[in-house]
Length: 317
Ligand SMILES: NC(=O)c1ccc[n+]([C@@H]2O[C@H](COP(=O)([O-])OP(=O)(O)OC[C@H]3O[C@@H](n4cnc5c(N)ncnc54)[C@H](OP(=O)(O)O)[C@@H]3O)[C@@H](O)[C@H]2O)c1
Image (cartoon, rainbow, N blue to C red; front, top):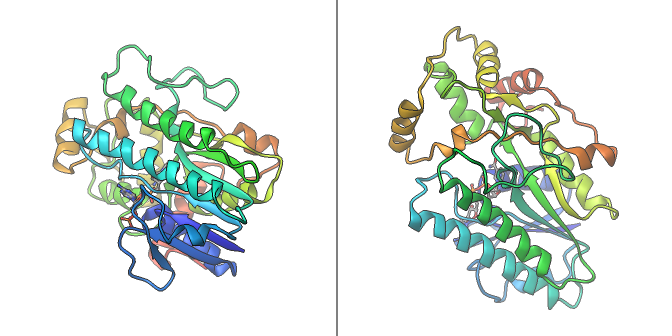
């Protein structure tokens, strides 16, 4: 099959590119700076010659968006919003004007769309969308607005021959250098992998192999459309999440950090504490109902596998 991946040059794109190419698919990546043979130029905002790639493709998986791993300044938040809304809109335009539109458009969304909560897990039917939680910094609502606007853009696109799925994805854990798992592992090895601000906030995550399998499942299942959570069925509190990681890599202690220490650390890393402090308790009800089975449903097994592959190379095969 021909698979077009706008924004496929980043962490998630590398995972999909590797797996889908290995499975024999013809993968084309849309990027603002093409460098490799299968990369095609686009600007993420307007139609251009790149739209030919979408015409006749089987699947489009749109991942484009300014990285969220940054300080949430007004300018960065605006760039996070605009890059997602504009790229989703123009992907929709390319599909709408294609003579042979793709069968399915898988649009990246995020588990961040759900409310910061501890009491119960968010599934697609009963989950609470975020933005009105009491006692959290006001700017957290903006990341929820970004996610909603992202999904709205896909929703309103008129693509009658193309099934649309919004992938509300949790943190994708892969052994690749520079990815989330790699960063957390390094912190754990430095003895810094302790609870942050008490560590009761939930971490939702998904193993990279399950992420790829879920994408393939969603691409194949003609009966599934709309928002779908891509997260392992067992999110864990941050304190337990890091304890498992420390145990897997044989580091007995992890210094706890207060909210203020996290602020300083996040500032030094040019990142934002929302990524650490927001409780993301998200479960994949629709995938499970549709019969999807997770290869790595629990964090201890997933962490051990990721660590092993980090030592032997990302595919681990
Ligand atoms: N990583 C995760 O665990 C995770 C979880 C949930 C959701 N997501 C979302 O999934 C998407 C991919 O994640 P990722 O970790 O692979 O992100 P990433 O490494 O930051 O890659 C995103 C890609 O988007 C493109 N991009 C950046 N700014 C853009 C702009 N202004 N206009 C058009 N394209 C732009 C970049 O491609 P070029 O520079 O080559 O054009 C970049 O490679 C992101 O939207 C992210 O928010 C990620």
